[in-house]
Amino acid sequence: MDAIKALTTRRSCRSYKQEQIKEEELQTILACGLNAPSARNRQSSKIVIVQNQDEIKELSKLNAEVMGNDGDPFYGAPTVCFIFVPKDESNGVKDGALVIGAMQTGAYALNMGSCWIDRCKEMFELEKGQHYLQKWHLEDYVGVGCCILGYVEKALPEKKILENRIIRG
Picture (cartoon, rainbow, N blue to C red):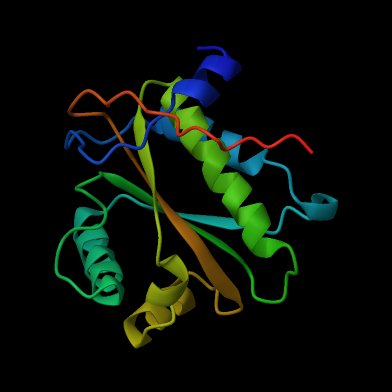
């Protein structure tokens, strides 16, 4: 799939097959994220990959707790990536956002589904979330977003582009 088609047709996926993604595909998606632009080429973002289903369920509960419900904000995706940046990095959140966007476009180019899940910062501010940061040696980092990945279970709907979003000065 060419870049323009991937960028103009990518959709968020909220329904995944339970089959784990292939390691080669994951490595390609991670390469897309790691090659995203960053301010002054600092490349300070970190990506934590979780594929253990018990751990994903626990992390999903943390995210749901922040959201104030008990649903599965990770939609049953078999792979969840958490993107972190240093707390003191002035452009960190912007850089981390570019990482997630590049990962999502890369996943789509491989005919895979992805979705940006919010509340990453808040879930790792919780006491239980802090334990994960310690486990991953990321105590001085802040969450930017969660990028869920997997094979699409249902066809994705066509996106409707809202009008009046471009203004010429």
